[in-house]
Image (cartoon, rainbow, N blue to C red; front, side):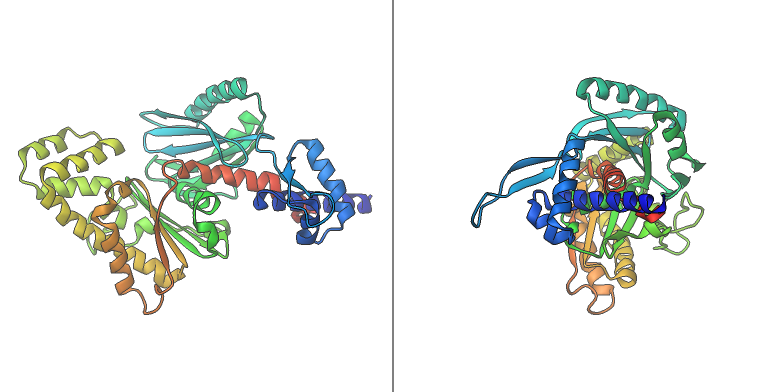
Length: 400
């Protein structure tokens, strides 16, 4: 019995090893699979046949022949299963459906006054049935990206200031309702994984990410693995940048998020401007991301010099945090993203130069700074990728 169990575990391991190699190669023949995985040609042939029968892979053409028959190229079947991604933001939920290659099939975003677990389940039920009817494909799992401190191992949102959540066991609730695997990630970790999957970050083993907007967050990838995988929290938005500064939601003072969020920028513009129209607009501005962005854009049109002065300070404050991250983690690649990149012309260059000038000598010499090129979808794509990686490629051998 033990031998049979061991054989099954090893077979599962080898199947997922092959599947992972096929997935990341984006097209590979059987002989190359054998060389890369160190599995015998016979084993590869048998297991590939099984993966094809399961519908997980397909033949997509022929490679150039070096003599004899042209090798057949194997690739993942992107329509084997679809994955649902959910980004829970400030007063909105973004629902995304993706195939296994990360091709977005559908996106629905809805606004809400208050977001609760029961609301998420209710809204997801509707999307689930609509997408099931439209596409007729089974769902592999659900990935959720949420702002705050997240225990991704147990699927719990420990704390979210933005949502006013504490110890919400979201994964358990969703698994019970939908009977699929559920992966919960901090939203910036999800953003970082998306950059590793579909951005330029995949070329670097050590990468840092900072997102700027309504909230401010960060993520670190060391040796190709999210630092939060080990239970570490990278709350870079709560690094102190000003002693006795503005009171932060976390209870401290002078955090980067308190000093440089959209709310803080809007308040500083209101205090600095002499424009009556802008002050009136500030008073009628509601507490929402789009309203704050619109206010900052309007201020740039009506009182540009005041806004430019505020962005000069913003550059320095964000630069302080960049410098600290570089000094601690020494990344090879540093990406800055988030909604604030709509205003990157006014701060990005100065922020990077401040960080380079003030970090330890030599640490930024080979460091590449970059901007987000994926856009809004990055927040949700990362947790979708987490589901694919966990359910398609992680073998049960660790539990054997």
